Length: 282
Figure (cartoon, rainbow, N blue to C red):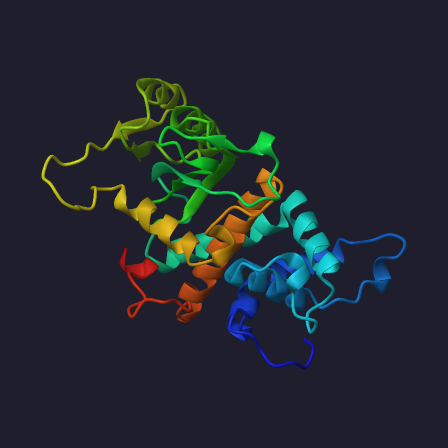
């Protein structure tokens, strides 16, 4: 690691120890002409990605004491394409579940969607208008009962929750066949329930209480908290990514950052007085 003043978004030694084996295997598998000349410290590449993720700055505004921004983005795109980022995320999710007293593979999950505005660099064809007349993209998520992401899909905001929900259930059944129960809100039509039944998943709609005022919805409140975790990463406060798959990867990095800090007992910098509910107590 290069000698420089640390940023608050840098991975600590403890957090790097959790994910370093994944990158060691990745680097060992890089063979061929020119690969020996790649001397960039992978920990510094990760630090640069987390700096963008946490602060929300454009790639080209990366501080000069990081590797060149084009190099950092190249790694970001390669790790997205070859599954390395998702591997890091899934490794930390398994560790976080075990730390919370759960098995690595979940049996129940929650599904929901969130529309967010997009920046000017996002193509019109990648945007849309949702049922609430909000223009942008939509994040479709499935989380476990701790609020940890199991599946994520990024679409135009015009894609309905029902359509996105069916696609998510397909991904969920393929990646986590142990899940047999999913809770959803009233925005998911009966076709989602039928689609889930065909996959061996019981999809149950959690109705909103009739009482006035705010009241956390049983089972479903955990995914609302997950959306809150994502919003603590300014790059996700608005969708700045030109490609939907890059946006999906930014979500994986945000959750990896959250989980690694929980696992090592390091609180994530926040504007709130309290850090909220820990994964272990959820």
